[in-house]
Length: 216
Length: 216
DNA sequence: GCGGAAAAGTTCGGTGACCGAACTCTTTTC
DNA sequence: GAAAAGAGTTCGGTCACCGAACTTTTCCGC
Image 1 (spheres, rainbow over the protein chains, first blue to last red):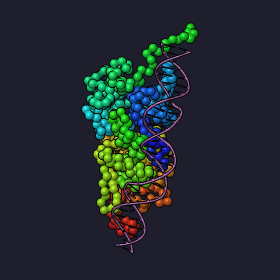
Image 2 (tube, rainbow over the protein chains, first blue to last red):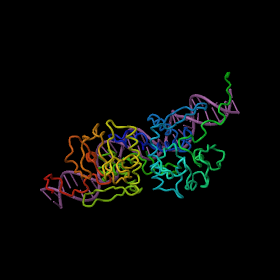
Image 3 (cartoon, protein in one colour):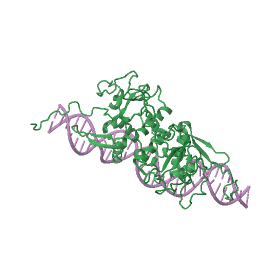
Image 4 (cartoon, protein in one colour):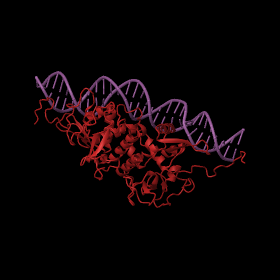
């Protein structure tokens, strides 16, 4: 959608929401943000969105207060985009649309992603409640895990049996077959990952290589 | 969004959903369909969407199996667009986005629309459960009622105290002040209405055009 | 039957958004 | 100092959207 030309006359709540998140690519960007994507280049590589459009969307979301843009210290010119409280409120909408797509345009072989409760590993249903303990699960307590439908088509070949223990920090590019040219985000999502935590290593492994300044 | 150019490479469920409902105006059209809007001219008048775009969206939704297009017998060239089972599945997404807009870009004076449980009149929360009886409420058992925020701005002036009994069939254009040029859909939504039931008189059943009040 | 009205689209030119590729700018790394 | 990487920006071509006018079909009153 190309909405911010304001849906004139429509003053209802849905119109106001669509002015913020209704443009093309915006909800996919936000879904990636929930998954832990934080940097411009990661979004660009994973979504294959034109860089100019991505820059425009990120700026718009920051202006709307949905994302916060903060420089990551120590690294080169790296900006991090993280969800604000306002942005976190969009999780039910992202989840509802994802579930609808999963149910009414199903992937062969079953769902590609599963949402699990971090506390007990049970699946979390579309209503946001854990099927194991029955409690409502906020997005930060969710794991996104590969489902049986992953690997059945073009995306990176993750055999469905792959089950790393939850919470593993993924070192991208070392243990995923580099022959299939998947982007780092797709590769990292081949194993369970907790939402809202950085998906890729936020800092280069050696943090500060050379404090050559006068350090007492 | 202008999505149906296919979000190449994105095969996840959210992308598939966005290909169907991600274009500009589409979700607003579907929300109106949930409210009981059924005819081309009603959508056009209420949403102020270009007629060419509306025709394209309706055709796309019919092709996707979200809406069903059926001629209304007896009337002139009138087509009715009604939600299919697949379309009904989108209610959680519409509700989630509406609630987000209500919460994070609130209207002055409070929400413009309230969702009530048809059975007991209690409010239905964002999770779809009735605050009175606690049961989950499917969209067909919801009433959309004017909230305190309605009438605070440009839309038709409905004083917040107006409370018709649920289920009333609204005869458009007779008892709403014609001085404020509101479209029939907006006028009809000034009083509670049950979702998925026709919002405007589906047939000119009685020879209405002559207000001789001869219908006992 | 006939003219008018209404509903449902269709057509058309102008404008803006999106796309893909190449380019710039800054900071870090060798 | 040279090279590389990250984060955008620039640019021309294409496509979607917009608003208004137009066409088509059906119904109504006469």
